[in-house]
Image 1 (tube, rainbow, N blue to C red):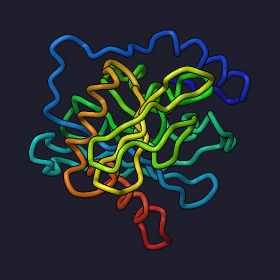
Image 2 (image 1 turned 180 degrees about the vertical axis):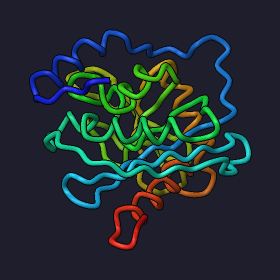
Image 3 (image 1 turned 30 degrees about the vertical axis):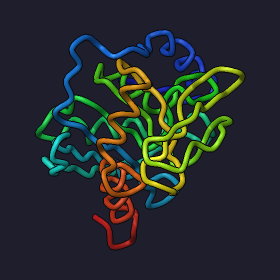
Image 4 (image 1 turned 120 degrees about the horizontal axis):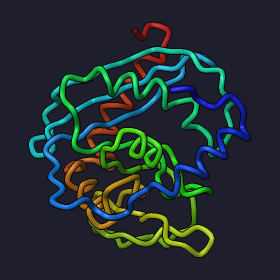
Length: 219
């Protein structure tokens, strides 16, 4: 597809596509495979897109792909998807296993226009998607100490996600709906993907691969 070249066109596309986001789980949603997606930067305009597919129950890695590309879209908050989507879609297209769920290292509805990277990925591909971010976009109260505790993430008076404690006493992650999954199920999936550490395994492995790809010795 032809990607927007200007900020104005990118914002207009987000405004148009946001109306297509589905914030409920599709009927009989079954998640057997799940993909983690992330982007690393070797330079300001050289990016590496990673897609890692896991068995959702065993967390065994089924396939992983790294794709390198260039981008000339400016680095602007709220529009990162236009730098990262093209290379992520290429990586997703090359994995041997089509995932049932996409987990983006970033935001979904927790976005000024309620259309972060996870929403864009989900609407573009038609695959259910969620955003799991390390930092909050919005306001929240600290959830309880125990694993599974959560609190609302709020922007402009609207609940856009949740702060979710994935392990006892660790900092929460910030979960928001991307597409075709509701917030309760999104949080349940993140907990399932994070049996031992703060970050879900999808994000941990994708982070590792993007750091390797972004290093001078990376491939």
